[in-house]
Image 1 (cartoon, rainbow over the protein chains, first blue to last red):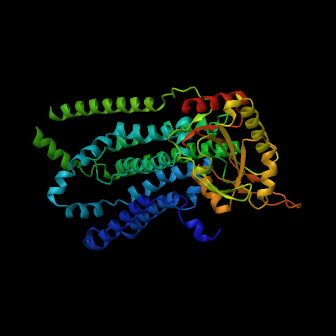
Image 2 (cartoon, rainbow over the protein chains, first blue to last red; image 1 turned 90 degrees about the vertical axis):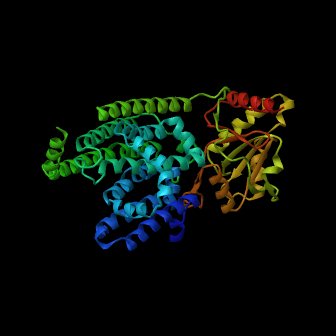
Image 3 (cartoon, rainbow over the protein chains, first blue to last red; image 1 turned 90 degrees about the horizontal axis):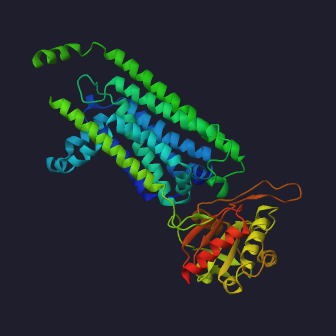
Length: 280
Length: 207
């Protein structure tokens, strides 16, 4: 197989390619046109691009072939779509670019798009966000659902897209750069609680897969593997990818939040005092 | 007061949404009405379609065998265990059917090893496993396309010193009804009685 075969999509999805092109297009044009002082630094631009690129790579290159026929590669794919890719994108803080484009939307359109904002606000309730984030992992790994998702092309695409979109929502809620003391973003304590809960719940599932004696996900057995790997090794590796890296990411997220909280400690107290005074 | 009111409201909203999500989830786990031994794959896969050559070397498509319940199985004639066992079982399952029903079922054996499996070799192999079985093969891209359509794959091992090589392939039997709609995915560990039960149900449901 030539290099081109590895880079071309295994299952070509025009909608997926179009979405990625639009995202990179809007980001790039936004960067060029926006005022110099608002423009994110090169490290942030790099993080954003890398995040988008790795998500694209696991969906529209030969990687996807291996993800369809190997359980552990599939777990790696979801690790990128649900964790690493969205984390990089959220940490890159594309808010200035989004603000730039938001300012270009006409007031009429803004009015029509308002329901989207309401849906977003509901989805970003911490409890709902946590439920969706962990629930989706459990849902798609539920053995009978997983079997169907790997057999049906449509379900497979729904699975991967739902993981990516929910990953973006969740990690944006967690890494929202706006300080909670003066904006509506989620407080640091709650962010850490959500992260801890997500970590523990994912560890339960990962541990269950790792320590399962039976074949839990036999669809790969039935439909053939990409190469003859021992089914138990495949399941063990897949379980470990569900168990360890997500738990580590929760901890890293908590540390990052602690650092931010300590940095901002006392920074906004004057303002809150003022607020208290006006309130009383 | 206002914020408190909203906080209570959002709690109610979250609780309701959780409930809805839970209901949706349980809805998805509902069982099929029919009591199949194989796994029901209705609606999960596209209908039977292929573009291959048969054991007479003629090019054939899915329409050429329509009107019957069809069992699609991927394999290769040098296969040491999986294929012969599965084909033997399918033969026992169909030959145990009521004679009137036997012609209503057809096994499609697709060899994914076109290098070694010439039409002649394929013909000899499938004849060994009864009358209602057809050997099919094609060029590798055609076979890859068919495998991809049914969410499966195959691969070749490195050849040994004597030139023989193993081929990894799906072990599942895909069952299509008379109209070519995908209906069941049978694992090779089903017994011939269990397979027969499902076949009879499929034949009778369309009649």
